[in-house]
Image (cartoon, rainbow, N blue to C red; front, side, top):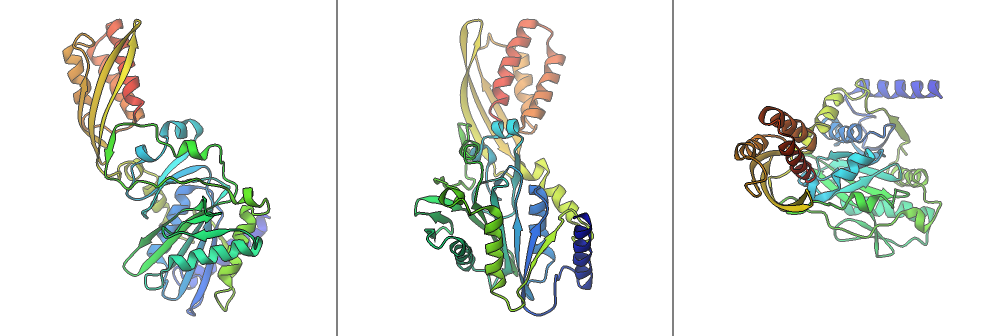
Length: 372
């Protein structure tokens, strides 16, 4: 198995050396690439790399990929409004922001991702979705799958099985879509439900839909079977009948500079910092010594950093100087629980050694971090 993989990699490297990122001859053709990685940042980096480096005047490309559990938000979305970050951190689910627009999707190994690359002139979402429908019907002719005006795919006119998004460059375009085969349906709805309240944002909002796995309609519709069927339909469009080429997205010899693309896509500054500016106005209660304290909190967050912060609570709760330190300390910091925890614990050590004040401070800080 190891020898087979090495031979295949050498063949791909040789192809790439013939001409930078051509993956074939100068004849108009189709290329099918299948990622060996389940890392969401590596696979998104491949999309970037193909968009930036491949000559799509001479070929069209279909890129097949699957990820370990991840939530992928659109280019102009707010993760605090789109998903349950607390649950994701607890379950070890990655958050990623893609370059294209559109809504938020949940990925795991039961979900297929398909990216269709063409020139901008040849870009056609409807054609791509029809290809997917043909592939599904080749496996199960009685399957009731239809495309919607929003370029999604629905099963039995009720359940969403595929979301879609696109990136249109000056000369290059790609359309990518998901396809639910056997994703974790018990986790998916909870991950994509935000628990945060009081967020005011003009960020692109996802449109919620009922979802269903294809395997619930027919147990033979596995990821492997569907990917093979989609590949066959794609090959049928081209005289050269391209075979699937497996690629390693971390291979710098194949994809020069791709490691840098992966690093950029996995940074806090990209994932959270690219969130459109938003406001937060919320309130919560703190229980202390069998009584409740009402707290009002308003913030403005820009590029992922707290720009303004106002916390209102009774004067007796904390000393005025400590209250001021709290608000001033948060301004300019990341809207991030980990960084906030470090910042607030440092402030407390420098401002107070009183046990009662420390307890109140910690209760307040826990509530503040719960909204992040």
